[in-house]
Image (cartoon, rainbow, N blue to C red; front, side, top):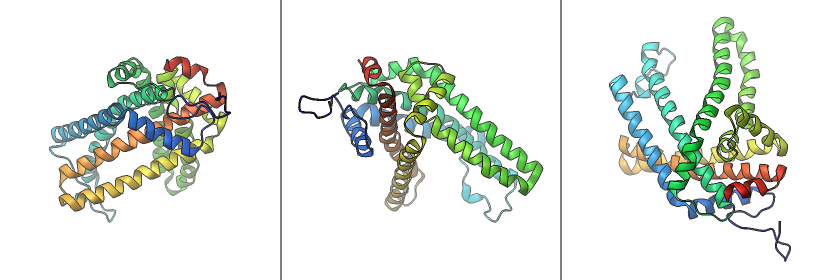
Length: 290
């Protein structure tokens, strides 16, 4: 699609042509700027709720939020010392994963519509996300099962074979990375294309490979790296200002997570749009956005 002057048609945050990295970054920035309430405000609220619920559940289950500083770092830590940290981590992981589906759904709805110039309020985005939530939960569970089985097999082999199993771990670790990248678009597919969890995972793998698995790995790695650097800078800054208070640490985590989920999620959503448009054209997405 193009204009009479030969330039690519642009209805919203990105031009309707194959997207380069700078298009993805610029498009994500524009989507966030034009839909700040849905992409940043809502995300911040959800992440603060996760932090609060995590604190409440850890306090109820463990008596308090455990600190890693209480565990010896010389390799002599016992299971009794590690158990509270493991339980606390699992609580946080579960809360973050489930509530993260709400953020993913809202980001996907808002960004795919922003490609065609639509601004989407939080209400319509949440309504669409609510309809997709069972599929999103299914995708999350199937992914966790597949990757969890590989991890469990590694732990079992290490327990039985000892150091010999390290060689097998070096083989299975790339398999985990491969699956994680191949399933990058699965949640976007579940929201936009309204297919089952298994079909979403299969469809994601097809779209990733149709344009390039390494391309998706590169963009994802850049998003993760940028998010990690931002997190380190923000936590160092908050520690300097607040003197290391717990509230400041939680606020830093929530603020950084908001940028990571809002902006980083928008980049990956636009990458899904780009791969699908390269493979099938833009008509299907245009119809859905309308």
